[in-house]
Length: 337
Image (cartoon, rainbow, N blue to C red):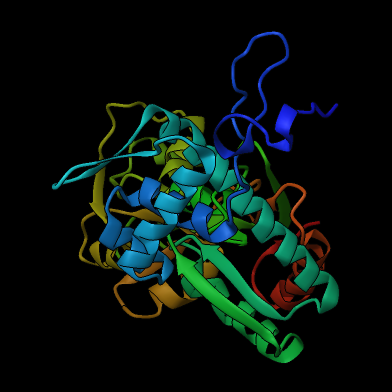
């Protein structure tokens, strides 16, 4: 309903109309913010520093400051508290920062879906990979992309599981290659294969070269593990607990990577568990190592691709998973899915 004002001109600031029966001026409708303004505000909200925020989104600092000020004017509220030394979010800014990020993510998803519909397997694919998978599976992934998807710009990020999941949910990454199950809400897993763990020992160890090692042997071994944060460490601990290993049994955390871990084994400091895909690469560097295989059923892990549930490129990622399974058949694994 439109109200008429005598004299033909609306009363109140910005042409706002008075609320019927109150005499009070209704607030003017805010102008809609632009995506550039939302992007600038989201960057400042994340970094709480104008220079860092401007660098993060490739905008000059004056332009970014102007965009945030224009957004505040459009919305009619103060989003930031500015001092000479730092930037803070106002209470309203705290609430609206998450909304701004949601809008930007939705627009990015829209553009991504349009790109995927227009030309699948083109453009950028940001793949996150855990360190205990990357050196052993990336050759197969890169070969597949080179041969089957030459227009795909594959960008690889090697990080631990928790960081990869954060990157996936925040839109920094598109697809993950890692050990599952994850138990993460909003994440869909595309299983690739199962692989057994093997025991790597010094050559003179009493289990060296055996092919029927019972899991119970893990109860008292000097087991070397990766540092905290690696999912392979957690998997090894789970295997040991299932074998009846007590918390008081000797167990040493000594390495940040599998290569160092294996060298420590070669030096006689203990034994370790390796996934089959890592065995040839890691044990081929030393003649002081031996391997032992567990009796069936051997302890194992599952490797999968993971994507956001309902991802715009879901069909593309499912096709990629199927192609990757075919590529991985030459490895000592059991293909699933």
